[in-house]
Image (cartoon, rainbow, N blue to C red; front, side):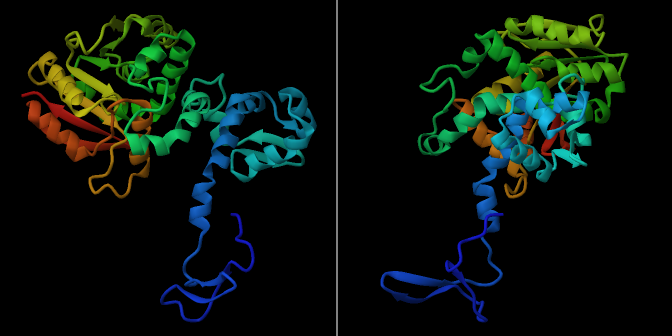
Amino acid sequence: MIEAPKGILATQQDTTQARSASCTSGQCDLILPMDLRPDHLLQTGLAFWQSKTLLSAVEIELFTHLARSPGTLEELQQRLNLHPRGARDYLDALVALGFLQRQDGLYRNTAETDFFLDKTKPSYIGGILEMANSRLYRYWGSLTEAVRTGESQNESKGGLDPFQAIYGDPAKLREFLRAMSGVSRGANLAIARQFPWARYRSCADIGTAQGDLVTQIALAHPHLSGLGFDLPAVDPIFQEYIASHQLSARVRFEGGSFFTEDLPQADVLLFGHILHDWDLETKLMLLRKAYAALPSGGAVVVYDSLIDDDRRQNAFGLLMSLNMLIETPGGFDYTGADCIGWMQQVGFQDCRVEHLIGPDAMVIGHKP
């Protein structure tokens, strides 16, 4: 916490209201209720300090290095090419933030950073942090312009297709697809556990990215066959990911655009972090196509960082919706009640919301 300079805040016994006490020579003493503090304002306003400290650690692969072997300050300076002026403060800041441990001068990962931020582990979720560092961090600097103009602020600024810029660059595409796996991993595992898969024989993941959702489902349920549907450029990256999990015999890829083509047929269609990319008209179009592709008795599963119905609690969901403002021409996040209403509008019945993990929840609808 940054403390306010002395002389700015004063207190008194009467805490019922804040008021100006006296103004002399153009200066005023501010008398503030004792139960009001600026901590939250300052910590939030300067939260980018903490964010960039972590993002830079992911960028230099600090946690991957420490997973191989812990190190002293001097050793890490050498291994990571850190300048002596900032290295000690930087590493100790990561200790204070709870991302590193230090004992007897030796730095090591915490259990969380070792499990989730070591690039050599299949549990690595740093892809989304890599993208946050290389793309989102600078685009969010234009949030003020976004909320005033309603226009996206990324590569698509000016009305271009945001996905064309990403899918047209192989390096950006690979980074983006890794990021989607990272941000979705926990929810994907929860869907594999929670949904009643024993009732179904097949599933198709629409907008599959690397294919982590269909991968986690197929790993947990050997009786299922799976399909990933995405633009053709994704095919080799998907195939590589599926093969790394020895699932090529049961999980296949189908290239296409859900704007111009019918959706693949399967017992269950899944939209993971897809609907929030688009405006309402497109959301409804995708749900109509899902309804048409499903057999009687089939189900659709939609998951995003659902905003709570009262729009007061799930700050992450609301911030994700602002991220859609930054990233897309018309995308926005939504509540579970919103999604149920859209599903019912196109014909789905017995719709319900189930929490998954953290800010993520899924909405399930059934085709009669």
